[in-house]
Length: 334
Image (cartoon, rainbow, N blue to C red):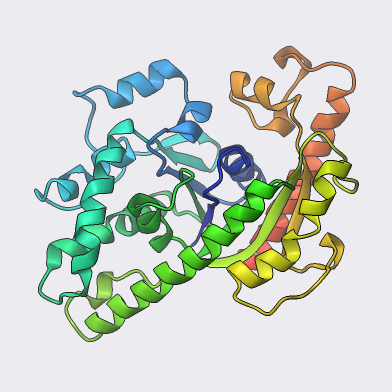
């Protein structure tokens, strides 16, 4: 099993929409997929599930383990361990553990316990910090998953740090604008700091009784995806071109810690996984119908040129998911 998170601390770059569509496409290609909603805003859950369904899962009398928050609630309160998750099978081979606004209460607990993880005597600090990793592993085992996608919010807080500790790989979704570039400059050094801090914690516990439950994940950056908003993927609008041209160099320097590569086109940058069309006319219809973009039909409200856009979305998303699987060494069934 391999785990992946689409991460950027800039909002509005398509993290949740891409996660939803990638998960559906991966399942469509024959993989078993789990989606974990680690965002307290529950955006990906609200795309997968109707409000009535979510209301039932959030009810105080709902069974334990039906959301991320209830799965780790005993750990948060210091009353027990991570519960086995009870996931929803939202499509063939595709499973969801929904989010919950109550997960935001875990943020403070994580922030308080993180500095204590260096102590070999503080079992609670490790239990809290690794709760999302244990939850991810259990969800993968229950679903016999090939890939776990984690959806997170646009922040550099303690909750997202814990979520990334549970992931093998990171992909950065970007837009060709100044804000995405600034996001790279924030995210890159932060990922490096989190990784170095966690490596130090692991080193402190090597050979100890807690070593086995310390996540070995490196949340390794494997590339970026650029969505060309309202423009052809191979011809950005002129106002965005100057920012788009800077992305390869900034990614190499800030995320990979490499030397400046100078001017480098997307087509020549091995870190560029894809340049996706924005499909802005399809996204609202897909969210209303709770379908991936590439499954939209005329009955869902598409017409005219949108039919071609759906076909293009199917082709592009399949190409990207195959690329992601190659980079993660995940084998797609023939």
